[in-house]
Image 1 (tube, helix red, strand yellow):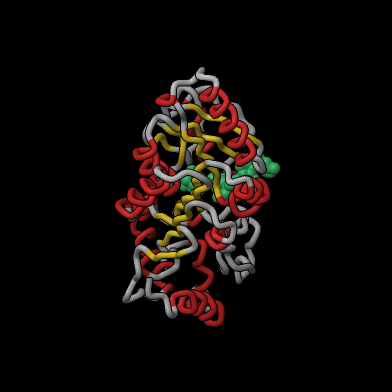
Image 2 (cartoon, rainbow, N blue to C red):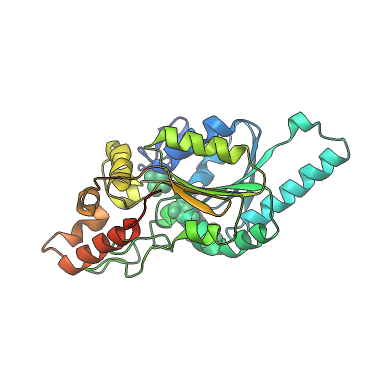
Length: 305
Ligand SMILES: Cc1ncc(C[n+]2csc(CCOP(=O)(O)OP(=O)(O)O)c2C)c(N)n1
Ligand code: SF4
Ligand SMILES: [Mg+2]
């Protein structure tokens, strides 16, 4: 994805380590989530993918997948899923594809596509009640091109395009609410740090028809600035501090699947990431820290389910 041509593993950049045969960074939270997700989806999956770090998973012969993969332009993965779903349905209808060989059309993109560049195509797909599953791994930036800010970047985070003393100026878009406003079949947030919650939601999504979103928290050691061994811990801190609520939407009702009754201060989550270090050094950015904490407090106030 860097424009260079890598002919053998030795040509890969140093930051890429071979983890389970894939050229992604060590400790990649997006990869951890997708591994857990694929364990449940299984081989009868066709991924429709827009450009991002996970595109590297399709590199023949190092792909860990056994099913099919369609690469689309960044804005149009859900439109690609429509074509795939239609083609499968026609083959099934004509008896040219046995029902047991049907595939699940699964869009796989990062937040750059899901929250921004591909949102229009996603909205259109939901308007048409397209029967597809959308997996977004959310590393809160354009990771593959060097962690520029996206519509998923949180307030205050330093990115390649927000290098000033206060980091990113905007608030993270609420993609869960945007999806839920379309009244689709299912929307859920998950985290690779909470594999049982993730597994239950994937089973639910797999057994429903219609448009479904799984929004996976994806701690990114390279873009967020932390030691790769901390990925799972950072995922836990995001949930325990209330920054990443685990919840699901179904039939007009939102249910929180984990409610952190004794929430940790958000600082405990922020402090362990280089992208927030300027909030503490050379001096504390008190007002920004207050705003970040109050937004989380406001979210949880009154939530009982
Ligand atoms: C329309 C378009 N703009 C820009 C790019 C270049 N590009 C390739 S991957 C990428 C980053 C995508 O970010 P995200 O969807 O969050 O996935 P991540 O890289 O974080 O895995 C970009 C900007 C592109 N492929 N298409
Ligand atoms: S840049 Fe981040 S999301 Fe991309 S492969 Fe590396 S750790 Fe994973
Ligand atoms: Mg991203």
